[in-house]
Image 1 (tube, rainbow, N blue to C red):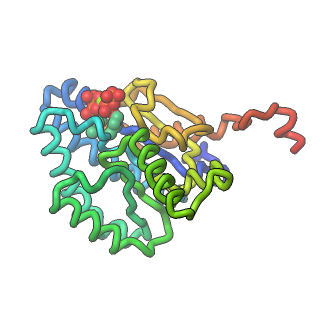
Image 2: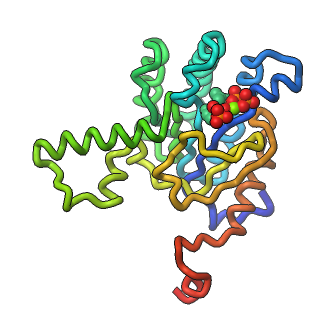
Length: 245
Ligand code: IPE
Ligand code: IPE
Ligand code: MG
């Protein structure tokens, strides 16, 4: 924490929490236990982000592709998610954290959907930090969903092609309540987006680490933020332009 500049924090951090399965394997445990340990790392990360003043934290918890994993694993993940929501509600209320989701929530099962709705309602007015969970999320599906809504609005004359801008398009995405991520972290030594925030990551700074998600702690988060703070975000301009502008 000593190394990070609290005045130059990323407003929005997004994390691809990867490596639970490999962590489990390394410890001769079943994959579900890897996910369970991963949920601990989620707790630490949420707490730390809130503590230092991150405004938005988006966590990739379950991709639309993850439905194709073995049934026991999907079941296990859904159960863990329910447990997480139940266990964290009080903490979210105490720490002024608002829970939101992106992804196709409708595909989740009823008890879980209900729990999500309840948690979102209970935290809806919190202002300290937005904790945005990507559940059954796919970036391409999200973009197609936006296009479908736009086509509908176009048919009723609510939007015309000449009005369409990047900002208006963004407002049709499920992330309309968040700014684009400033920093995207992926753990476990994989270097890909895996269908996460495809549109939103256009100018995001990427940080990759070999640390497996269950081992990702405060120190690792601070390292990622320190690396982010050493970057120059040029947005297509030259260094000179940025320094003089
Ligand atoms: C990330 O860990 C959690 C989810 C995708 C839900 P993995 O389960 O992908 O872990 P690895 O990649 O198999 O190690
Ligand atoms: C991405 O991890 C999804 C989540 C972290 C929830 P995966 O482990 O599913 O990604 P791939 O399959 O390695 O690309
Ligand atoms: Mg993985």
